[in-house]
Image (cartoon, rainbow, N blue to C red; front, side, top):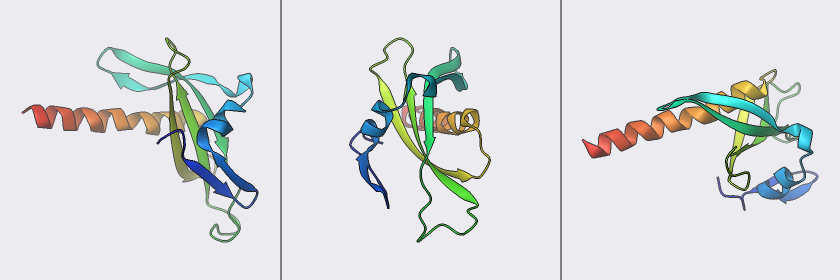
Length: 115
């Protein structure tokens, strides 16, 4: 999603890149998001659970909303942003793996178009 994507909650509105820019250094974890053509695709990942939306989320909540960022190891200025809606109890490494599954889908489209 674009870095200008707005994240809304009852506490206010922020751009996704602003939320990630404010993440502390220890929020980043080096994780693989799956295997690629040349082996594991490893990036630095940061994730934060967003506040529950009391209007739409059940009580107790069965899922949480997350904001994620993927940062390139070779160029730390290269960032990708994600929003996720995932079951309570999910771990960041699983969120990264799911976000990384987009690569496999895109590869299928590229191969299909080339055929």
